Length: 372
Ligand code: SF4
Image (cartoon, rainbow, N blue to C red):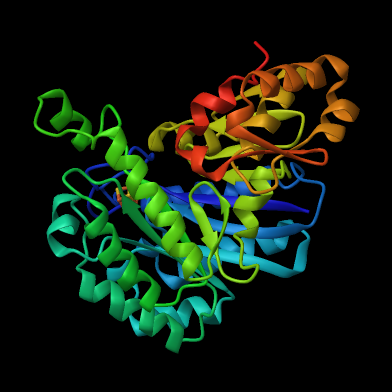
């Protein structure tokens, strides 16, 4: 089973923290959609497995008209074998989700919505340069449910400058009141080159202290646990098995095809990433010359990838799999790191897991296993 990701790189407004590839002008929308359809056709043999998940991400997919989304989907259906139980996720901004738009998405087969709420505090939303208010977000979730969407993922950001546990508590209370089946909670990071990054450089914005980060993270995990959400990945929580199948497939290292500028693809032997430039992407596709770079994966790369994606999840790494797939050298490496860092990991039979309370330091801890 495999997945397809479509990157819609347009946003009406740029959020202060965002470092995704996006463009605030819709000037190239028509040629881009044409190019994406052509890319789907040109790469129809990239995956030799039925498609189990389709994910519209961005940018802001909800900037597209329903007919445009349907058109992209039809091109996929015409060129790939699609599983009967497809998970079809669509990322949306609250202010795009009118009742008519929601009904349109439902009619074309979207069965999972991922809505960027980010905060229930209008001042914080304004600070982040979001387009919507808290009230609009709440209304759109209710409308989505009325339209029949029973698989809803809501995104929230914590660790915002000047925030504390009380702020988070109030936001989580409002979030859980909406009873989403899935929650993605991300700690705000200030990336270079973003509007927040520029403010930080000038000394006008600062990340919260590590101690505050840790308090907020531990509070988040405990709060959501009490509300019966299972944490199945560092930033992802779900009710009764409603995991994001698409993202889980990434972590399970299933193959996926990324369509659109900046989209990444993976077929178990190679990684490939399309150019992050609208014009070059469109012209390249017009000439049937996909503007992308790729990298063949060595055993070492595959091992490092396996460690990196799996230790962030509840599934952890399987030592038997490590030995069988990568060999004794890699198994001994895992055992050595484990011996030196016993307090950070748990070993259950042959499964090695990162302790949930260590998730905030996961990048640092996971890197210890990498073979250079
Ligand atoms: S809407 Fe999403 S992709 Fe667009 S700027 Fe905001 S965070 Fe980035």
